Image (cartoon, rainbow, N blue to C red):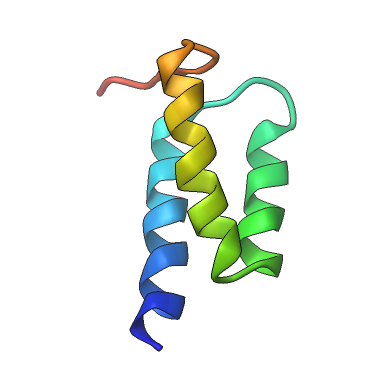
Length: 61
């Protein structure tokens, strides 16, 4: 039960830190919302590969 609440929040927090191009951010928001457990897991698995291949650039504050 806790994972259903914590995973989406962590995914949204991570999503805000990323600098996606185009509509990628909107797509990820929809995936996380409509797939509450598998969406965040999918996000974290895929974002690791995005960072590895520099497909996105992190925002540094």
